[in-house]
Length: 186
Image 1 (cartoon, rainbow, N blue to C red):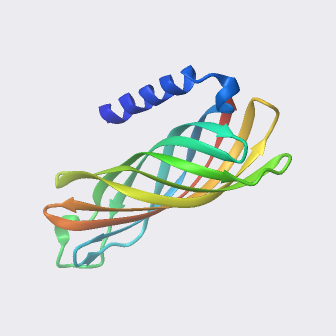
Image 2 (image 1 turned 90 degrees about the horizontal axis):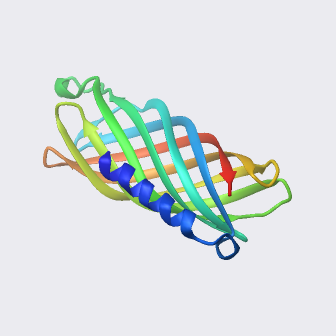
């Protein structure tokens, strides 16, 4: 968590130093929504679990493109119908993501749909079992509703995928997130 906060502070500092005329629009935003996680652990399959997701983002928008840094966190529960794995039943899973995304924006006057793809580091902490972090990718689409020169509302759906090593076995996490939020432009 300390590394994530330090990375965000560093990224925001760099974004604030970039001259506005060269970078386009610099923005900061908050996001919240739902995260639907589908986990798989070697030969054990878990039911999907939906949880609240919250995070922050910062980016630089230039013409039809944007580069964005994202951080989010969500807490899920592992639930399985497999009676041979009682130690995993109801286990809390804290998931966080810190990464970078590129956006391809389709500029229309007020509504701006976009496609996004990125890569980042996911940290998964399974309570009293193990913790691991690894790189993974995400893809998605969204829409931004521009309300003046300094404010916009956004909605976005993304699919996240990462493979982790928990108890020396492969732990696969597929996660679909649906978020809404706002951006303030500088």
